[in-house]
Every structure is written in C-alpha cells, then in structure tokens.
Length: 215
Image (cartoon, rainbow, N blue to C red; front, top):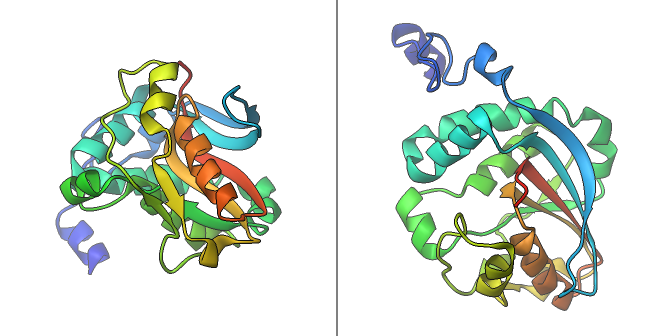
C-alpha cells in the first residue's frame, strides 16, 4: 500500500523539495559521518561509558532530528537517517549481538505531545538490520519530567537529570544493555540511565547515539 501511494503521490525531500524520497540521496550525502567510539567520563560518576555515534549533530542531521522532535509527522525522515546510519555499523554487528538494546525513555509529557519516541524509532531500525535483542516493554522508566536541555550548560544538564530514571531489576539484572538515543551532547542522559541500570544489577552498559554534539 505504501509503495502504491508513493507511485501516485511521490514523496518530496523535506530538505531540498526534490521528488522521490522524504530524505533524498543528495541530502543524505551531505550528512557528516563520525562513526566513532569514545569513552564518556564525568567526575560525578564512578564509572565510564563507551559511546558509539554515527553522525555529527550539524547541518541536515540537526535539522532532521529537530523536525522529528517538534513536528511529529516528519519522523519518517528520521527512519531514513537511521537506516543510512546502519550501513556504517556492519563492522560492529558482532558487538551489537552481545547486548539487549533499549531506547532512552522520554517524559510522559513529551511522549504524549509527539506520539512516539525518537529513540524507539532508531531501535526499531537497528533491530530490523542487526542481530540485536530487544525488550517487549522498556524496563527503563523516566521518573520525572525535565525541561528541554537544548540551551542548558553541561553542569545544568547533569543537575536537571539527577535521579530521573528507574529500571526494573526483574527484567535487566545480569544482562548486557545498550542504551540508544537520537543525540548525545553532555552524556548526562546516558550517565543517569546507566546509574539506574547499575542499581538494578545490569552486568555491563554501552551507549549508541545516532548523532553527537559537543558543548
């Protein structure tokens, strides 16, 4: 049905208005690829985290993620971006097979406004293309709503998210977990999620971000 509709009403690229795809090949080619693994550290935590990120949060990547967050109907472009990102992950396929993968949960308010979680979209794309294991229901929960982190400093981000998450130990204890989000900036969200998972008895934790932005 979707293919038929595309034939009758060809989609237009959200970024250049060319006909044929919601995120065209020319525009995808302009996305800055990092495809890097780094170690996240913070003096407020007694552990480090490994982060794998694919794109730099700039240009069309930034615009795509912002559109999907604040214009929910345009999340299809995020799926295309995530699918392109997966093509860079083939060398890491065995790495993904060691983990149960879960999305960073949004606040109930944001989920209600948008109707979907961007990180869930990315997890679904990963699950379709890589040998990963997922949960039927996310064992990680956000305990408190937090305001937008966009304009906050690194310190403010960590303070805002302090103790914001809880994990169901009956579902995650003893497992290797890979946390997934659309963007990593300070790492505050990943650290707070990891803290909750460690309290629940998780064996090891890795992080994956579709995009990376440095403060």
